[in-house]
Length: 430
Length: 166
Image 1 (cartoon, chains in turn green, yellow):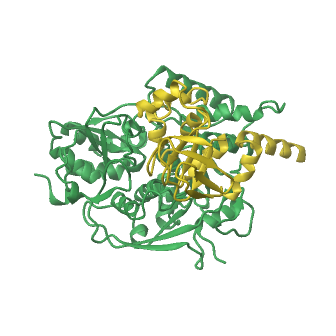
Image 2 (cartoon, helix red, strand yellow):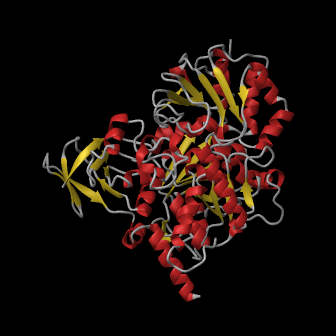
Image 3 (spheres, one colour):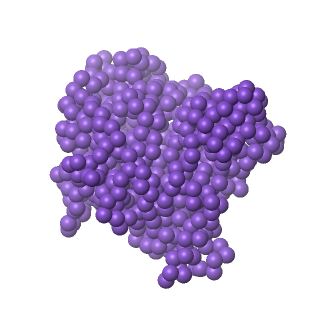
């Protein structure tokens, strides 16, 4: 019986010839990623060894990576002390793939991993962050876990008792219209299948639209697969994957492709045609409350956010800069831009996008998670509304339960920043 | 038999259970103070120890969706709450099993605040309304972790087995 990409990866990583949905396996982990919550992982890791007489040891430090991104630079003594604790642990345990708060190699974990060449097709990637699904863009099986589960991975090198998830095949065809793209596609899909439509399942993306999509766009759809509950989102590797890994991630040597078998068994096949898709907006307070932009046009916004692990990449900044060039952010609206990594920040600077944003009145912040999760900066006031290219709009997400967050693409965000109300970029900005 | 102390709807996110701005607090001994911090009244009752251990929160579908933050589980575990819901989001359910927070997926669960629930092996009985709801068993793969008393104990056991095997 043929296997899906997820089944193939899990079979290989578990040392089995084949697996099928529902099987219980113990895959070896190729990459174990954490961010600031490594502070808790360390705590749980040390607890495993308590009373055993065994000296605490990470199974393979070369497969562990830690990136500071959630609260950078530290917003409080507590965070700073946690970061210090992690730094000391990293140094004394030989973890080389550590990305501290830096302008050159720092940034958001879900951009640092791909751009640093840490992820390859066929890998099993576990991360203490729900958006670890992002890395399926490079045909990896990448999934989010809790800190205690990561401690277990650090000890044993395997993910314990994993039930192979069934896979939904999503076939996407059609060319995006101007100012419509991957973010609109994934919002549309989440709206269609709901926030739990893929819970305990894998979304495997196919079709001409996905084949024509850059890795940057694929990272968007895999990133937000978790908003439909998916364990993983996967784009089978192709020429674009190889181009990205060679040109942007600097990988040399052989790259294996992880393709599904022709007779792979899917739980369901979904077909989407994007050729008539309009820009989409997820309305408060759930990510599956998705509407075409037309139905929320004119909604007043106090803060526009462009960035995050979803839409803080160079092409996102490019489209926003194209719309904002020579224009001004509306007087009663503030706009915050967060490039996804130091590398992207430097590229955007060289291309003049950063200057465009600043001239327009936007504030360009350092790479990091920024206001997305409401822990650090860019909080909203009571009754305020944000329009954001991030991935979650749950009540209180941007630090204030009395505020509202709408989610959209960089094009909608940029066009709306100019008018101060939700605007369809396809209709032009007056 | 235990009382329902909080009734919630579908898609209760980990941002609601444990708001992001408290994420710098990580230790299970410290997280309980921030449980449902934005639900000031319920949070105050928890902190004043007015909610007895073993009390029940009832949720709808997809309870615990969103972030993988384990604080959302340790904060509830710290108050010895039991979560009964129609269904759970994957990472939250996994974290609950790993940390020993009792979660019960009960198909079609209907209960109001103040109702008394009896949680059996196969069904939840709402003693106040007399209605019965079937319990969905845990993913089979996870039972071994529950049986070992949580993931730390299970990992320790597996580590020692490996060391003995050389």
